[in-house]
Image (tube, rainbow, N blue to C red; front, side, top):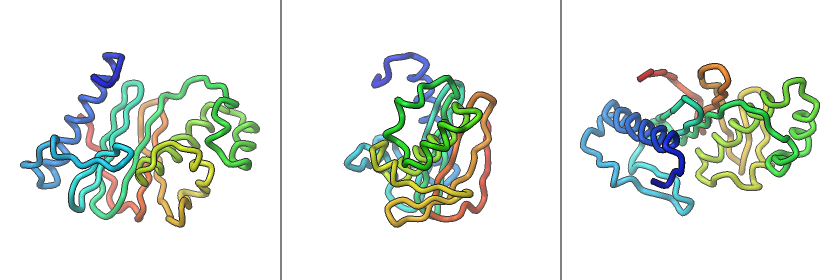
Length: 176
């Protein structure tokens, strides 16, 4: 009930269903979701090697798993924005590139989902530290950590990125 809109509550429920299915697929059939552990910023996690992250926007829900390190995923519905409202998120060069982009919304949501995925994987959440993320050609640096970024296939009008602290081995898309 932490979501006001029923649509968000449904997306969150689908995320939990996908989490449960993924846990089963990773041999954790007996794990109870009540036993999730939370960091100081309330990022949920599992004890052991399997890491996960959930994101939802529009009509898309993603639950991603990683057995060899940290993982973060972010999906956003591409809609009109006022770029100036988000200047605090980006370093000077990135913000300049966004202002000069032919498709500002597309460029913004690409840059946003990359940063959000990294911050979710790292566990810090969206802060002004996002300005310190340096991204180029599928890799990023943040807090002396290298991050591997991959575009995640989603329906039109959405953008999604996956961030891991080790190269992605097998990316398997399971539609439910």
